[in-house]
Length: 612
Image (cartoon, rainbow, N blue to C red):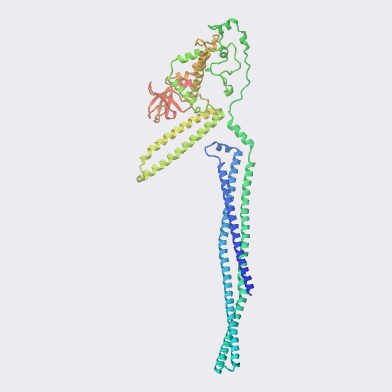
C-alpha cells in the first residue's frame, strides 16, 4: 500500500516536470517569434535606407536624369522597394501583435493554471496522507490495547489459580482484565470506524479527485499544444497575407522595366545636345602654286631685309586674314571652321593682298578714344572674364534657346512669387484700413513700393530674354547685340595686338615689316569694314527726344536717374535689350528702361531706319 502511494506521488512529480517543460517550450517558441520580428523590422529599415540612399537629390543633376525612361524605371523600382519594405513592417507588426503579445499573456495564464492544479493535487495528496496516518495511529492503539487486555487476562488467570493469593487480589486482577478488554473493544471500534472512513477517502482520492486533477492537467497541456499549432498557423498566415501586395510590388518593378524605351532616351539626348548649326559645306581647294609665278624682283622686294635674312614669318602672315573684316557668308560657320585662317567664300585669289596689320592697329591705337567705345570694351571684358554672355550667345543656337527659355521661366516664377507677396501685403493693408487698431496702413507702403520696383525690374529682364529668345527662334529680325559685338571686337583686338607684339619681338631691330605687295582694293574694303565696326560708337548726336512717364533711380553702373515728366535727348535707340541711351546735358548721359519713357525720334532718323 505504501509502495503504491509512493508510485502515485512519483508520477505526480513527473507530470509537474512535464508541464514545466511545456511552458518553457512555449516561451522558447515565443522568443523565436520575437527574433523573427526583430529581423523583419531591421530588414525593412535597411530596405528603406537603401531606397532613400539612391533617391535623386534635390537641386542636382539627378533630377534632370528623371526625363529618361530608364531613370524613371529605377525611381519606380525604388518606390516599389519602399512599399516592399512596408510589407515587411506589416509582417513584423502582425507577428508582434497576433503572436508574441498573445503568447506572452497565455504563458502567464498557463503558469497560473498549472500552479493552481498542482496545488490542488498536493492538497489532495496531503489529505489522504493525513487520513492514512490517522488510520495507522488507531491501528497501533488497537493493537496495543489488545495486547494489554491479553496480558491482563493472563495475569488474572494466574492469580486465580494461585491458592496463596487472597480473594481481593484476585478480584482486582479480574477487574483490571475486564478494563483492558473494554479498552481493546473501544480501540477496535474506533479502528474500524477510521478504517472505513479512510477507505472511503482513499477511494474518492484515487477514483475521483486525482483523476479530475490529472484530467485538468491533461486539458491544460492539450490547450498548450493546440495554442502552439494555432500560433504556427498564424505565423504562416501573416506572411501569406502580404504575398499579394508583394506580388503587386514585383509586378510594378516588372512593368517599370518594360516601360524603358531606348529610342526615346536616345532622342532626348539628341534634343538636349543638338547645336542647331548647319552642316558645313565642302572645303574649297586653295591654290598656293600662284606664288611660284611671281617675278624675282617682286620676291626680292617682299623678302629683302637690312641684314640679308629672309623674314621667317612672311609666309605665315600671307595666310592670315584681317580679323576685323566681316565675312559675308549667310549662315554662321560651325566652331570647328571659324578660325581666322578659314576662307568664307572659297579659295582666296593670290592677287588679293592684305593690308599690313601693324598699320591698321597703329591707326586704331593712335585714334582718339571714345567714351562709349571703352564702355563697350569694358562690357566685353567682363563677359570674357565671367562665366559667359548674359544672352548665352556663346552657346549653339539650340542650347541657347533652351537656356533662354529656362531663364524666362525662372524670372516668371520670381515675378509670380513677388506678385503673391504684393497681393498679401495689399490685403493686409486693406485690413489695417478697416481695422486701424491692428496696425498702421502706411507701414506697408515702403514694402509695396519695393516689391513694385522688383517686379518691374524682373519684367524688364523677362522682356530682354524674350527678345533674345525671339531672335533665336526667328520670330523677330536678328538684332546685333552691341555689348556682345564690342566684346568680340575687344577679343579680336587683343589677339591682333598679341600677334603684332610677337612679330615685333621676332624682328632683330624691334621693327615690324609686312608684305608691301598688298592689293589697294583690299585695303579700301578693309578700311570700310573697319570703319563700319565703329559707326555705332561715333553716333553721339541726338536722334530725338523722350519724356519720362515714370521716375527711375539709376543705381547700377551706366544708368541715369530720371524724374517723372522730365524731357531728355535720345542718343541711342533701344537695341532690343530693353534699354535706351539718353542725355540730360553734355556731361550726364546713361541708360534708362525703354518702358519708362516715351520716345520721339526725328523724322530723318525714322526715314533712315525705314530705308534700312
